[in-house]
Length: 225
Image (cartoon, rainbow, N blue to C red; front, side, top):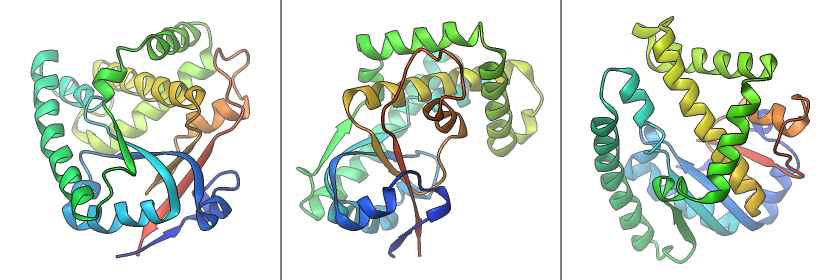
């Protein structure tokens, strides 16, 4: 298994950066409910990323996924416990692959649950939620993205407003994390899929007086071949 760059979904000078070897810290997301958690995929993907980057921050979206379980009827404690358990299992697999290829020094793990307690993240989350209460355009885009997500992941619940609200909270957290990491200096991300349209709009200045500004943001979309 190898990988190529999806030029249509890659922003900025991401293609050139990857080909030359990215010297900046790179964000690498792993989706817990996808092909990305298979050991076969990780054994190809992580060494390939390491060969094209100087240093990477890797995170698993287990903490975010609790919103999907809550939307399906789990209480908050059950949802958190289930995702944490699943996350520990996936992280064990990731660590075994990193050890196998002697890459443990190349990748630094970000724990979403622990990072959610930081002051900078909490402040950004509060700011964008407050902004959404006063920006019809931003909130409309948030709900549109949540509806698309619901149709893809929870089609049996499509149109349920309570479910939509949980998924909007999911997206609030995801956006807040990416903005927070960007301000920390982690401005390049690699992912086997497209960027979030709402993050592209924030960077492009589509939302007037948005509380967080990014001076640089590069999304590199890759495809397995």
